[in-house]
Length: 316
Image 1 (cartoon, rainbow, N blue to C red):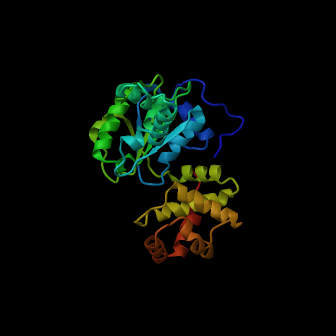
Image 2 (image 1 turned 135 degrees about the vertical axis):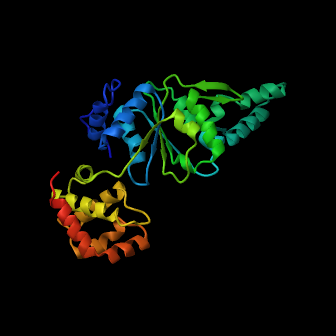
Image 3 (image 1 turned 90 degrees about the vertical axis):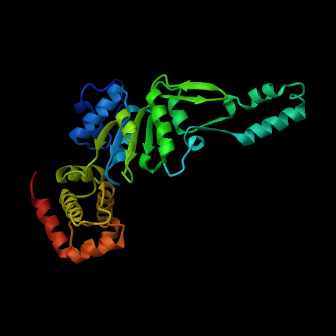
């Protein structure tokens, strides 16, 4: 989702959490008060922000919206088991180094050079491949980037320890070149689905916020913002149905992303309100496991539709 053309990127630090709430809302993300406050403090105190919560509650989207708002480049590091420094921080472009070496030999440039001098040529910054962490620290822009470290809980303990060191000083040492330090630290957002606990040391370095599923009225506002073609009646019914689904003890309860997908699918079909046939036919847009769909049908599609209608009629 692109930023509205009449909006300008941030020109000064927000003064209150209310400023953050307003800005994120303008750029397509409706936070609750706790999240707006956490983002405000992370920006003002220049501290990393660790967002934990179930998959699909909008943790990653926070960083994307911050990038659109501040105008800083979004730099994403997707964590996974086995990730290491060469994939997350830096590596050397060995093919270019080899070409340079062969070219030096062909032209005779390497004749008379000592091994140390030749190594200095090969381990020059022009052969350095900056991965996400180094790119965020040595960004060279006036606007600090937004560094998204996604699903940090999937990384190994060793990488998490290294990450703590980097985020404590906002600097990286490349043995062949020296130290790279951030002139303007990036805005750092870490996310975790809590497949394992993030270590206390990293949590102490970060500000922390648990991202909940939105309440009914906020989810209605989100649907209306992200699916403007959906009628208000449909938006309220979809939010009500999803609220009911989350209470069925499903294997994978639907997140906000699934709510939006469902509303988009229904609007594309020209649906103005839920009915049993439509819900049964489109259940796969909101529930992505067969077991969850079976449990929902056992609960009763008719009951789901009735509860959605009743919830949709309730005023805030």
